[in-house]
Amino acid sequence: MLLAIVIATAQVLGVLSSISALLTTRTSQGAIAWIVSLNTFPYLAVPAYWVFGRTRFNGYIRSRKEVDQRLISRLGNIGGHIALRRAGEHDEAGRALALERIAKLPFTRGNTVELLTNGRRAFDTMFGAIRRARSYCLIQFYIVRDDSLGEALRDILVDAVQRGVAVYFLYDEIGSHALGRGYVRDLRDHGVRMHPFSSTRGVRNRFQLNFRNHRKVLVVDGVEGFVGGFNVGNEYLGESPRFGPWRDTHLRMTGPALTGLQLPFVEDWHWATGEYLDLDWQSCAEHSEQGQAEYLQDEGGHAESDDSEDGVTVPMAPIDDAVALVLPSGPADATPTASLIVQHAIHSASNRLWIASPYFVPDEGVQDALKLAVLRGVDVRVLIPDKPDHLLIYLSAFAFVGHMLEAGVRIFRFLPGFLHQKAMLIDDSVATIGTVNIDNRSFRLNFEITAIVGSRRFAAQVESMLTRDFSHSREMTVEEMRTMPVWLRVVSRLAYLLAPIQ
Image (cartoon, rainbow, N blue to C red; front, side):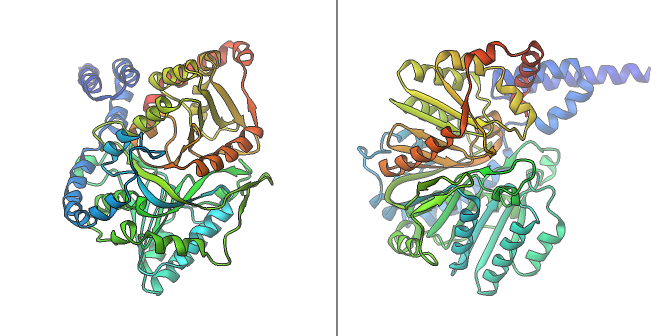
């Protein structure tokens, strides 16, 4: 009798959960995956659905409304300065009106940007910025490790606090699950305000584990900022025995676009701590010239090139007066912002679209848009790792890559080590650097951030960077996909079906 009640209860909960999945899951593929599993294996799928199945972070939505009400009046005072630097409709990035409406911020002139493609130089540059801090540092990483790089960061932050700098440090509780309590306690004891971005904060969110804060951001005094793919760990310096050389890209910038880096940090901090940060917004909007001067006068001067792990030198001189917009995205947005950014890039391309992403599992809409771009005559190339760090993501690609190759999309596998950069090059004038991967998690479940830069000179640098990466890659062929063993076809299709809920 008891067994019959348990079975009946599980089936009822499976049906009710299926209705919820049908009404709330943002993709039909994801809804089907959940509905099938909830009715076939309700004993396992029901608890999994209520832990991993949410697609809207309602608690964060409420928190963001609270902090945004305070920011509206604060930012209203500097709105005129930002407007003066607004990029006109005929600028390189001026065609991106839709992105401005999503971000609720304009593309602006007066930004200086620089590519950082080598792990050691990227962290040396970020550490140099922290050493120059006078007022505050905003730091956010998905992964923080207590290794030699983590220790170096800790020492620099402690030194900054001792100089009177306020340091606010966010890390994702899932991404940094291996970070010991001693590391956090040590920084807190020295005055660093360090907190996890916990998606499970609050009674209603206790079992909510599927949202991640995947952003990697550093802002110093509101005049110098960084965003990109590097996390804090020795593997990002190329010291992982498993992956060897680590290929990643970060962006350093000054100017009014930094407003877009500070805003989401304030919202994330409010969610994590309940506190509102009253930062220096004026420096972003009004004093960007001063920030650029300090930026170009780094300790010892900047090199005119960036030496990557493969020994190839690429010009990486800072680009000034770039048009730029920083656009955050996440599961609290009314629309799937990250997906819209990528689809906008695809539809905007007229002659070239190059994409680098470590996790490339696009939904059918993005796949079709890429195929359509090829039919328009666009040179579409996708760079992915040859060495995987996520087996299901790696296997999923074999389920759809063949059709994309047949349509004319060129797909390359990076050979020297692990490819982790997230970059796009659109034609000869626009490039993006950020944290967004081309998969469902980045599109709909993660908090991400993307810098969009309109500058022919910067685009030329990104072109050189990606051309070098393609030269160290293997291009996939239709023939290798046609001769793929049957077992791999079956396994890859099963992995692809799970992609929406990974």
